[in-house]
Structure formats: structure tokens, C-alpha cells
Length: 225
Ligand code: CO
Image (cartoon, rainbow, N blue to C red; front, side, top):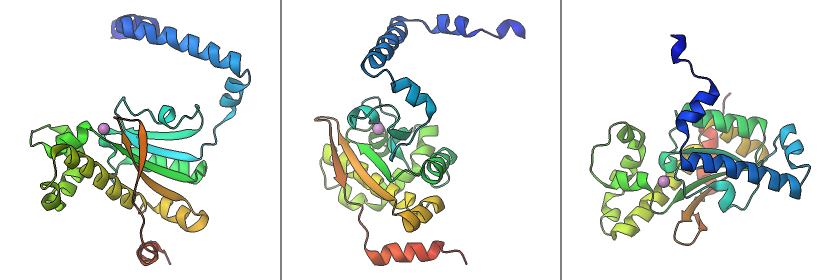
């Protein structure tokens, strides 16, 4: 059995290819660059974090939250999954929300979708994708619910529309997580919806406003006596 146990050196040599080696080199340059510009940066970073934002976005390599928000390490708490789906029983989601909302006391939750999302395209196509079909099921339900509107749109507009609907539904689901319900009531936590446009790098706000009655009504259904 022991012969299968590799040391970290062995593993990294197995992974070595040009891109990987270049990335490690780039990291060394980046770290010394930051240290030269701000000698306290890594010392402070090691002490702890106090981000104001929990960002929930897609895994897509083209939407790196810290970069598109022009922030530094330590300023955004992050959870990314395929197509930024908010599944109310996803333990990874609930843990990230619990830790950042209850313990880090973040002030904003940002749910961000993006144009040309592979998960959205997959939901609109009718191919069988195995495990991804299970993951994308909540979005397929949104597609079903809005089928009449979606079919009147061009292919590109349909993708954008479903990406937005997915964010709107996700924000709605986020507002029903008990930790979030409490933080909205007790300290005015805000939940926002965004769409990142790949073609120009801009973040667009998605309307996720709800009237006071809806918000009160939701609050009531969660009020424990
Ligand atoms: Co995506």
C-alpha cells in the first residue's frame, strides 16, 4: 500500500506541465511584488479577515470575483459553483453563508450570474449530462416555468434572460435561509443580484426588490415562537 503514497514533491512532479510551472513562477513574482509595494500586507493577511461581501458566483474561469471587483485578497468571501445555483439544501452553500453571515458579519451577499454561462446553455439544450442534470435541475424548473416568455426570444437573449431569472430565484432562496432571515431582520443584511457581461466586463444589477408586504410575510413564516 505504501508504495502508492506519494510525497508532495512526487505529486507536483506528476502535475508539472508548462502552464503549471509557469503559474508557480508567477506566484513567486506576485508575492514578492505585493510584499515590495506593501510590506505589511501578508503580515496583516495572516492575522485574519473582515470582508464585507459574500460573493456567490459561477465557477467559470472568466468571472474571478476579486479581479472584476478590483479588490484585494481578504476583501471578498467566496463561494462558486456551476452556474451559481442556489439549492436550499446545498451544505457547501449553507456552511459558507453561516460562517460569513453569522461569524464574519458580512454586510452584503452578492449572487452573480454571467452571460454565455455553460450551465445556462446546458439547461436550455436538451442533451443528457448525467450529474450536471441533477445539479442544474432547479434552473430547468425555472426554464419550464418561464417557457412561454423564453421561447419568444433570440438564442442570446434567452440565455441572458434565464441567467437573470436564475439569479432572481437564487436571491429569493437566499433570503429564506434562516441565518439570512435573522441577519436581514437584526442588522439589515442586504442580498443583491448581478449579471456579469463577458463582452465588456461590466456588472449589471438585476432587479431583486420585493415589496414590504412580501418581506414581512416571509419574516412571519420564519418567526419562531
Ligand atoms: Co457560468
